[in-house]
Length: 110
Image 1 (cartoon, helix red, strand yellow):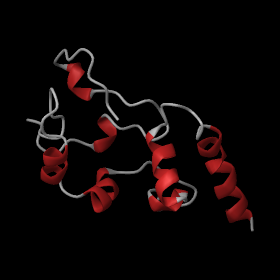
Image 2 (cartoon, one colour; image 1 turned 60 degrees about the horizontal axis):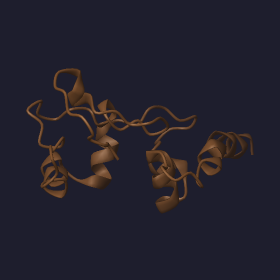
Image 3 (cartoon, rainbow, N blue to C red; image 1 turned 90 degrees about the vertical axis):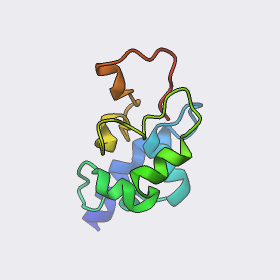
Image 4 (cartoon, one colour; image 1 turned 135 degrees about the vertical axis):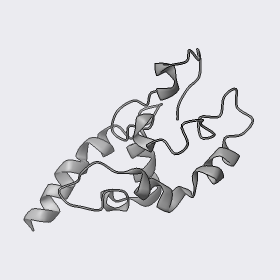
């Protein structure tokens, strides 16, 4: 019972942000799968690693093919297999990690 209450409490911020126009990554995943455990493999939740992301989204090559044709293709990185969390921040606004070295103006990370 305590575990269920903890999971519900931890997921509460996800539901309160669900009406926002620009949903966070975690909110969009919650809309699709409806439970925190779909991404978080441990409770209490710990950070989600790239291995978990790729289990659902496929390889970096598959992701690069899906995002081909954009101004830049961050999934076709010269950094080989970067950590998904470098750009995608589940419960925070995403960033473009490429901007640490490059300057890509106006590129929005989903």
